[in-house]
Image (cartoon, rainbow, N blue to C red):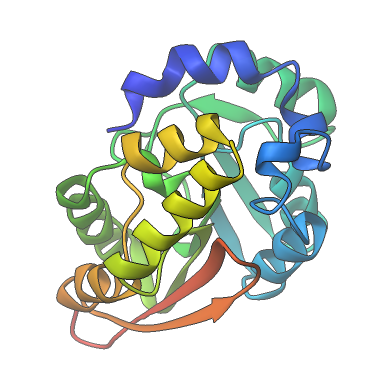
Amino acid sequence: MGREFVDLFNRWAETYDSTVAGMDEEYKDVFENYGQILQEVASRVNGHVIEFGTGTGNLTEFLAAKAETVMGVEPSDKMREAANRKLKETEVVEGDFLVFPEPEQPVDAVVSSYAFHHLTDEEKGKAAAIYADILKTGGKVVFADTMFMNEDRKQEIIRDAQKRQFFNLAEDLQTEYYTTLPVMASIFEDAGFEVSFTSMNKFVWILEAVKRENH
């Protein structure tokens, strides 16, 4: 459920904000339009929101400015500490995509950025079913993450990273659980959602899944 990456998150906490700002050449394309991506996620939701994988709280800040309430959920101690230092009114609590404190209010939206790929496709399916249970009809899942049009495109991008000697990026793309748009669509449609995608850069797409009636 992504917990195998917690040590990585703890080590990354101090430098995460400089990475997303484009200071790391290997990951510059991954985080292209980072601020715009976070704003786009936040613009699609309102009401009572749960954010998973808050990291240092960058998306949380955008959400807190417009949502009625935001519950941030993050498994990494160091990331939570960084987020709670940055955020003035929103507390980030311990948890992950599958195991988290029960929300106090009915949930209007579930959001995340750059994190859902830490779950296997099987775990993604379990998560989607959980979100279908806690969301109101018409409620949304809005996730920004690295995804690929298809498996051929994924392999093409891995080869390009290797050619550019971006070996950390290439290993990351092969080690973590990055998936394709058809797989992601199937996962959320099976859980009772209407699904659409928006491309934000070479790597990142926004998934918007709206809960259908009778689910």
